[in-house]
Length: 372
Image (cartoon, rainbow, N blue to C red; front, top):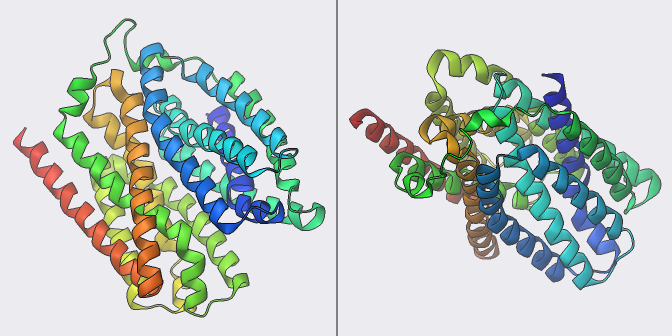
């Protein structure tokens, strides 16, 4: 189990150490705000496109470990090149590759872990710990060594992650029998799965919108940047205990219960941000992120595993993640329009409406399950 804990901690440490600092880095190398937006958007769209493709390749070849090894090597090269290429086109290409690698790597990691007998939630929580610690350490490194120093830290971490991947036991063959046909038609005819994909678009879409605009919202309601940093750190760490207790909840109540509970929590969370826009209140409710995001990520992949055929699990999970990215693009665009005309507070009213629809869909999925 230790090797999987190290795997998640190292990978997400590198993600936390790099992902949130790119916008600052881009401004230092004279890439405009408009150009940065284009870089992030293109990176997200390409990552969304590649996730199902790599998931299908994984299901066809059953070589998760080998694919992750290749992705780790590509990530290392990309991070090294970013230290020497400062042109807009160059950075656009490199960031797009970075986004494809990291956002395709996440579901593949989950596939590897789900193939074991270990409690997924207890392993996945180390990803949240790694992300929080990575963001904190990278911030300190930037303060001491400059804006681009996070890239060197990320290079070191990517090397460590690559070594850890090589140490992971090859056990993914139990996902399906050799030569068993990957029946995608059956996957797309699975009504429960299709409903959950739409749920992912709504839930993960609002979460992506929150990540993009929370700083603007927090500033609009009178919060300081120092308090913002503390709030984000507390929110990220709050996922850890909830991922830890998710295993017990799933054993007692079932994975579907945990997913529905997460959606209820996030709907209340967004509604609270809309109705009570005060910095002190928002910070004091940091546990709401763990109760929503922590529980959802701990339960979502297990729920997918329970409703799809084993030989389509990789494709199913990567389509699920891609749907979240697609939902994010839609939510981010609409939220930008809302902010321009009404203000950042109102986006959380929009978010709570979308997650309430997701909740209704989950109860619809439950009815389909009962009919069967």
